Image 1 (spheres, one colour):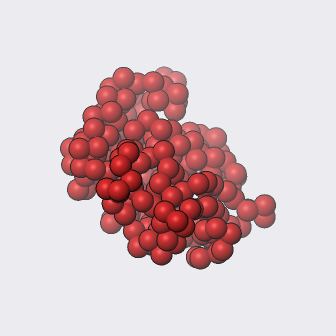
Image 2 (image 1 turned 30 degrees about the horizontal axis):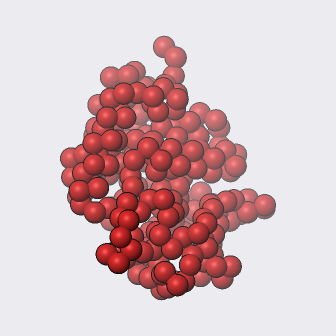
Length: 221
């Protein structure tokens, strides 16, 4: 049997339905966008990270699969959505014929991506954490009324550009963000994202690299 590919997972109607329904739940709760754009960005960044660090293409492909499916557990509840999503992914991918060794790596990564319980215990899990937490952008904000922005809306809306890269010497993972400080102070970013950035540092360290956060050309971590 041929190995499952990211493209097959991305086009799978069952998985796409769970993503769409999960995003609807988060929309009702007032969360930023967690739909196909976030899934694709996370998936492709996770794969790119591992490829640039010299991991095999198949490992990168599994990271893409984990990245695309990582938030489906929100269809059940935001609380413990990483663990719910891992169980859902196990059921789907097992039925689709993914081998046990690959399945274990994918569901472990999904189950360990949320900052409350995450452990970057495998390369795929570490790459997923970095890719997921780096997705900060204006287009994730659903609220069109700036006067009613909460802090998450304000921080994401303030982002003018963001990039997650590997340094030329491959020794450092760098997240570079440019924000409009008229919309959001730098400290507001840390108020809601400090735990995520510390988790990114742990993920980078698991991969044998350091982690650097730059905001408006100033290194803050």
